Structures are given as structure tokens and as C-alpha cells.
Amino acid sequence: MTKYSMDIAFILGSKIVELTLIVLMGYGLVKAKLLKSEDSKPLSIIGLYIISPAVMIEAFQISYTPEILEGLMLSFGMAVFLHGMLVIIGTVLKRTLKLDPIEHAASIYANSGNLIIPLVMGLFGKEWVVYASCFIIVQTFMFWTHCRLIIAGKGNLTLKTIVKNINIWSIMMGLVMFALQIKLPDTINGTLSSVGMFIGPNAMLIAGMLIASIPLRDLFSSKRIYLVTFLRLLVIPLFLMVVVKLCGFSGWVENGETIALISFLATTSPAASTVTQMALIFGNNPQKASAIYGVTTLLCMFSMPFIIALYQLW
Image 1 (tube, rainbow, N blue to C red):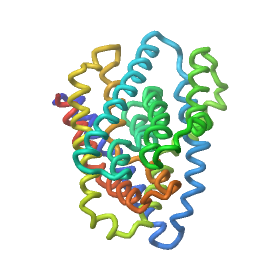
Image 2 (image 1 turned 45 degrees about the horizontal axis):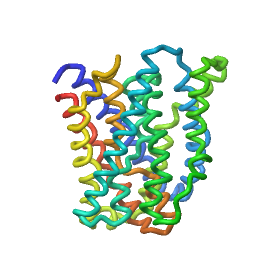
Image 3 (image 1 turned 30 degrees about the vertical axis):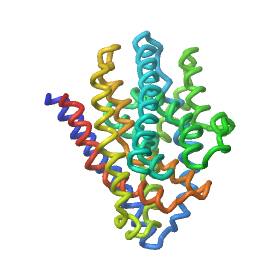
Image 4 (image 1 turned 120 degrees about the vertical axis):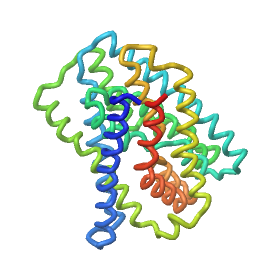
């Protein structure tokens, strides 16, 4: 392993530890009865409608170059390819391991937006967030079509929610400004940058507050939760790592190594919080969804650096 590879794995581990400590802060606030778990809702609204759009719009405030356009095409193509692979993997695992809808959705859908954006900002700098946004576009579409279909069942598929999703609109706005090279005034850009710095801490505080509402018995007593955790954090990322390496995406464009790593990194994160939210909305075992979310979030501090170290070692 090169020094650069070791540095990436070490920095990733450090960043995840930092975010995990913030999770514990949120957990402590609820356990100390200073706040209730439900108090995380205002933070979720702030994250969804203010912080995340600010990050997305600012990410596209970059000068146009053919290299950036090629990088965006690679990251978008990889996002589509990886989600296609995840659908196939999920179908196979569902049949072979008899996964229920929550286990099925939680095993293949990762918490890419909330966790990957702050990690990419910390590892490579905010100018690289634009490549992570391509994965988020595809994942958001899949959340409200395929994932929703898994959890809610047939007859609940709609594109209306996708069209109304503010993250999609903010990314599209950013893309238009990038294509037309519309630059925001420094004051506005600085404001977006300042707000965007909260994306990691805000998401992790919410995670900690939600985990605090889950009885420890529910977190650690079910063998099925361990099975899904094993699939989400190790089995699926390791399989995708082999596929990504064999396809040789890193050699397709300039800076392809970093862009491919960012796309792959998005598949290694814990179970998506959106799965828990959908389970709650559609009344499909939200307790299990919350437990899987909690366990995978706590254990990813060990699994993600390990997976990325192996990726870099190849």
C-alpha cells in the first residue's frame, strides 16, 4: 500500500470517528433528558431544506473544463451502474436468505447523502462534492421508486415525490448554473459555504438522537439485524469493490482514480435513514429499520476504513 493510500484510509477513519463522537453527543442529549428523540425533527428539516441544498448548489460553483465534464459523466455512469448492481444483488439475497422488505431495503441502500458528503469534503475538499452529487441524484430516484416499492408494496409507486424533492431541484439548479457558468456573488457563495459546513454534525446529531430512542435490547438481540449489518457493511461493498476494480473505471478519465473512489465510497456507508423514514410512513416494521440503522451507523467506523484500505491496496 502506498503512502497516499494509507493516508486516505487513516484520514477516513479519523473523520468517521469524529462523526461517531457527534452521534454519541446526540445520544447523550436524549439520554440526559435534555432533549427528546422527536426533537430531531426540526434538525432534519433544517438539514433537508437548508443545509443540503446549500452544499449542492455551492458544489457546482466551479469553472467549466472538459475534464470536469468527463468526470461528471463518469460519476453519473458509475452511479447508474452501481445501483443496477445493487438491485440485482438485493434480488439474489432476498431469495437466498429470505430477507423481509426492511432487511432487503436496508441491505442495499446506503446513507450516502448524510455521511458521504462530509467525508468527501474532509478527505478531498469541497470541490470534489460535485462528483458525489451524481450518486445522490440516482439514489434519490431509486429511493422513491425501487426502495419505496420494496417497503410499501405494489400500487404505491409515484414519481410525484421525486419531482418535489428539494435535493433534486438544488442539484438541477447547480447543474444549470455550472452549464451556463453563472457565478453567485461572493457574499452568497460564502453564506452557502458556511451553512454547508453543518451537514456532517447536523446529520450525526440526528442519528444519535434517533438511536437513543431504540432500546438496547432491540439493537443487539436480533440475529437478523447482525445478518443485514454484515451484508450492508462488508459483503456488498466487498463484492462491488471487485466489480469496480475489474471494470477499471479509475483509468477512464483524468482524476478517474479519485472519482471512482468517491462513487465506491458511497456504497460502503451504513443503512440509509430514508429506509427508516419510509418504514415509519408506511407502517412496515419501523422498529427493525431503526435498529438496523443504529447498529450499522455505530459499526461503520470500523468497516469503512477497512474496506477503503482494501480498495486502495488493490
